[in-house]
Length: 290
Image 1 (cartoon, rainbow, N blue to C red):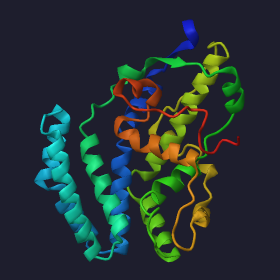
Image 2: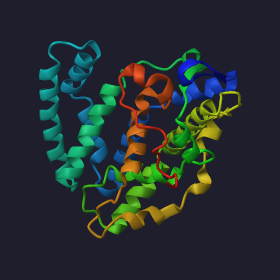
Image 3: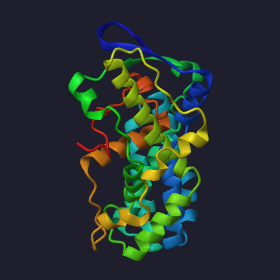
Image 4: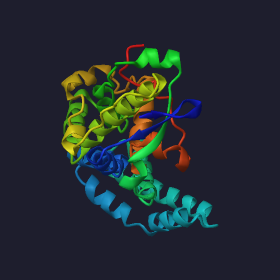
């Protein structure tokens, strides 16, 4: 890492680090979580998967994706048409037993997944060498040496789909277990944790003068298992009231926002601003004791 002018450093990843970063950056975290939620709801409400399959085949969804991709003049009309489709499928999900608020949220998330899927993929060369901004002195002192708590990302990922519902403790436990066991969920959670942490470390190193090595993950397995020792199992259920409400802190919500943006990759410091994503300040991360 080389310190440049105005508190900007140039971060250079080696080939294995860059390959791992770009592979992770193209994991569609929002899609992973939505698919996991569908599987979990299927266990609670048989028939959910068939309804979702039909929802994804709706012409209005394809038309919205096309209009969004081309920024077509008919975009507003396409959004309205898709809203009507969401309403119809919300009612169908209610017919298999899902609460209205949960069904509505699920259809909205499924729409977002399809729209975000058209975003450009991240190439290895675009992140192998990139600028990193230094944290301020006070911010750097607050986060130096800290780890990002994986548990926060795990908790918020699954709770976001049931946050407004009224599921029993038994149903919540079933939903959580199925959700977390779904394909690529642990990779999504681990990657969100890993790259927020190492990007934060890079910004601290830049604040310290830039003349320091910051190690990035060199394999997908390393990403998948990042900070896995911070998990507390079903302890996350304790933050759910008897009415099923989730007590999610603003810092944890920041984590979720970054997590679901991984349709564009977790390389937020590298590609987020250029794509118009409003990024949280990295020092304000869930799991950091301040």
